[in-house]
Length: 194
Image 1 (tube, rainbow, N blue to C red):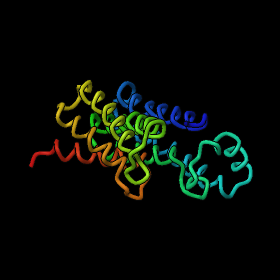
Image 2 (cartoon, rainbow, N blue to C red):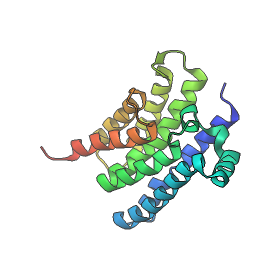
Image 3 (cartoon, rainbow, N blue to C red):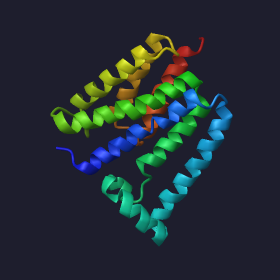
Image 4 (cartoon, one colour):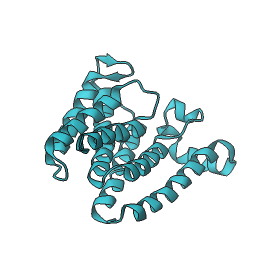
């Protein structure tokens, strides 16, 4: 059973799709968009750090978000939202536009599907994750890959697989950071001539 605050958290995670969608539909210039995202990211970092030290930030933040936070986020680590912003900046700066967009979509949608299905139906553990969650995230990412026309299908599909492998690997980085950077890095390597 998933509690209501977890659904809110996953809803916010899906709202992160606004970042790749704005990049696809609105911002034609990579560096203009990156400047805007960088300013927003710095604000997220200041709020994230300030919630531990500045009483007014702490009380406002706690009122709205504490029920959605993971245990490690409550104990001083950066929130998933801040990691999303950092990953978005790095992905857009380092990868081609089609790869950055797709890797950020995998992070938002694939990770959400893996989390919800894993918590609802997961019985077979892979560390702290489940095979059921992995399979759900992989199916969703494969569906996205098949329908994504900005990259060759085999690259998109390998990116989908690598996104969900990054999700289950016990690398001590936030999923919101390692999924887009891992899958995006692999897709960029596959696109590069040898």
